[in-house]
Length: 173
Length: 151
Image (tube, rainbow over all chains, first blue to last red):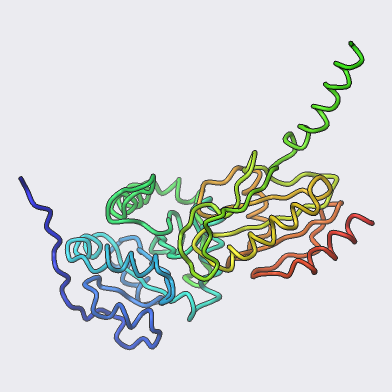
């Protein structure tokens, strides 16, 4: 019988070291190569021609903490994320205008819009897919993180569909 | 006998007609923890929960997320308001954690600004008299309802 092995998280550092918010500081040593929201992340996404995976959360949000523990500290998942996405983390409390825009965008697209907010964004700033809390394994009708990420990668291949079913984010222009 | 049957049909229609217009029999989730952002399931349940705006009467719209204690507290106020104003005000309950109907998406696109909970009150002519994020006291909403019902 095969044992399920959870790879141990490898320490960072990622690009959050200079960030002051508690939620971002907490993720400094996560194995995901997180960027803070900003031009550098979008520039990197354009260079690599990859979508942005955005995580919005807060220190007081238990489901954000659970997703950090289950998903973003898993070395195998982190490797997958770093191979296919540019990862960006946002603190709900530190960026109210940005968060309102992101939540509204997901609501308009008929996607979950609570916390944590998991968004997929094109390198030119179009939010085209997203979810809320995503478990490590599918449960209670919720897709797993991996399933959602695969869906995001499959959707970005269809540019015409993205053009008609996405929200251009102002801050990313 | 025929008159009795006709009266019964009229009575049944009168009782069931609100079901044709939208969410009814609103019930608050009794397992809600109002002090944390725990996920306790849908905050409010009811018949035809995906209904949207109804013309010709004031509408109260709550847009909420399940894992949010501010949303839970506003959900409790919403059900209290429903119990007081049912039949006179149309209630729309929009859960951002589940797929929404096209009718509800119209309201989301028109009024939702981000943040939860979000409350919208539309008067009898469909004009917004309240449209803001965050919890709002029932007394304020009742004032708006009473003005809308009087006008």
